[in-house]
Length: 195
Ligand SMILES: [Zn+2]
Image 1 (cartoon, rainbow, N blue to C red):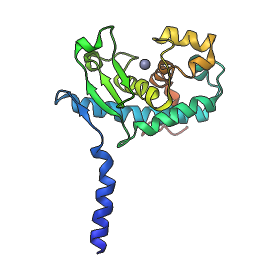
Image 2 (image 1 turned 120 degrees about the vertical axis):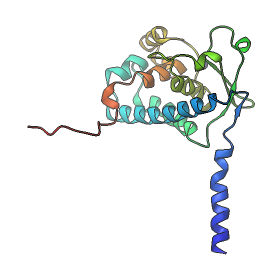
Image 3 (image 1 turned 45 degrees about the horizontal axis):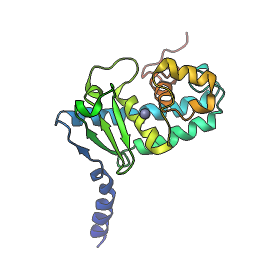
């Protein structure tokens, strides 16, 4: 009986994993997408810790202007929830034709699905990384962010000009997390003893 109950509990716990669906993608894209989800989750977690420790850090002000830290943290936390295994939205790989305009990805609400453009799988630079693109789309779905400004320059400018708009702009969250200063990185495994 006990074993049966345990089996029943395990099967329920196993359910969310099956909910994570990938549609229309090449077989070799699967691991790339999975790695990007994991990295997004870890980086947003690090960004929340950074924000908690340094609510008025110049990096926070660079991307969100005078927005109070709790408003920024709210979007990051609700997005982190949806970046976790079993809670991630469905992903579909789109054709080049569906991505005219140079998009990396799209977000759709009904049914909830993130579309990945061929460019998503291309070489990565300092920004618009795969994990950052997933985060961008998840902030739309989870927190209702907008696309008021695209790209680092316009997003920085938005933070200066209109902080509350920056705090609801998907790219500001993407760049805040992608360009998080090294200070937020976990401490290195080997630490030097002071002499
Ligand atoms: Zn967007």
